[in-house]
Image (cartoon, rainbow, N blue to C red; front, side, top):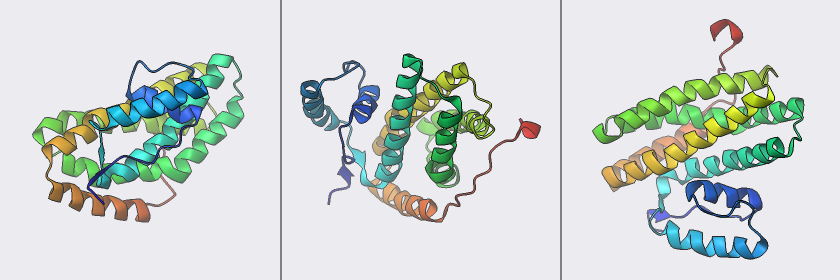
Length: 207
């Protein structure tokens, strides 16, 4: 198996929007025919954006969260917002996956990649974005998000993930050696296995 491989792709409408977010210009509401075209177009474009095997676990988690963002954005646009149920789902995503993802990045990925001069500023930006996103996840846990806050949450989270995929991961693959990526991949896999399901979210008293 080569070091560079594309993540597994399951083209539901939500994931079609995920790839549209990576490649601007894809139609807003693809039909089945357009989905097939999008699949072909993605495979063609993805040749220049293959994800290193060591980063695929994080990219797959990005897909899961962006699928949530797409569903939530559609509900917002349709005016069909059940704040209680959506905030419960956001909290569930954080507890089951996002907290582990954040912890692995903060404890393993960022310290290593931050040593690469060309990527240091991006890492600093992503760290700051984690703080802001944790505050929004905490509001969801406290059921204090309003509809406008949900829209802000979707935009911030999607933008954060796109930055990691387009700027951080692509930069790592260009600037780091295969050995460095492999060593980092081992550490990331261990962190993802060992990370606790109990993540610290900022409470009102600390915000």
